[in-house]
Length: 129
Length: 345
Image 1 (cartoon, chains in turn brown, purple):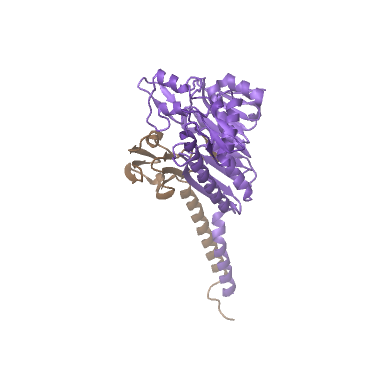
Image 2: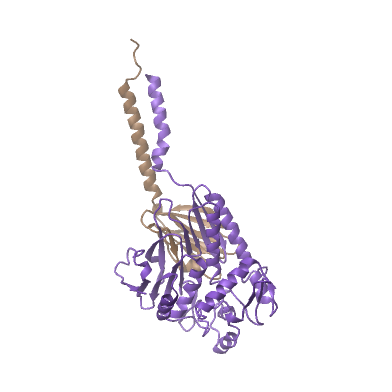
């Protein structure tokens, strides 16, 4: 009888390991996806994506749009427009956001900052305001 | 044996991506656009979602071009600049102005689309806010009278008296919502949700057959919502003092919802009104008109006219709902301790 290079048991264990690893990866991916990711859109285009759950120190960056300039501040778990030279200052007055219930919007500059994947707060589909 | 096991392994690998997804999802399409001086989110579900969303965006942009007050190429701009002569308009503009005038009349002028000259004096149209002096307001109020807007439907013309200006800000998004719902349905979509700057309109139910959950913004803390409405096939439109306002040098908050009788911000005791109604244009108009009327006036209007449901928040933080919302309204987490009073017919 021809000798098998690997036993059936070997293959069964290998497949089981691969499946277990993939299951673990799926769980991990899900956990990471439900962190708090802030996406920054200018003119409807995503220009920056920040995982707020991995931020350890405050920092700022500047968004130059067609109409004005927004200074965005990032902190652990939250994000805001710190200052802007737009006329109405609605974006600045919105303050810090930590979940997906309300995005930061600067209409003059067509800037939107939205927290998109947040495990806790998406019990509604849309908010009337 | 090796071959068979290799095949099995390959099959297992092919299945992995499916396992990672967990469940099959209905096709959907979402687009975010800037129009009508606000931000709009359009989402549709189903096989024709993508074409329906594209057609919706096209429809919105076309209406924006017709109805904008500050776009010098719009029909409304032309009507406002005509100095008393008739202006020929498209059927959209004609229909919307007619609908708006009907609602102005039905609400006894609590909604008045000709308030625009006063709104401009306050700076709400430009964000250069100021408190006009009483004489200025008094003088401008002579031009505020929706009944002097003349619509000739046979000739498709609109005529204003000299000095008058109209603004469809209180109805345009509602009308646009209705039009988008029609575009969606016409494209074969049976499940869609749109937010036109916070004016919500839903078509059908969610793809899984359950109702849409629509949050109602907390007027005291506009980043969160105090209640949730479980609804289908309806518009949900909220008006509140928090949407556009400024704090004057006198420390007083002035908001953009003006009382057409006085020319000053409407302070009838409500800080937020939410209207639930199948017609977007009616919901939009009534959310403003009921804010102007105040709780007593709004209750009376609801009892006499019906055709809609409402959620009111008073300036002493009381929440009122009309009886038709008893089963669809719930307080959101963190607001469970607030009491909700039901307005019975």
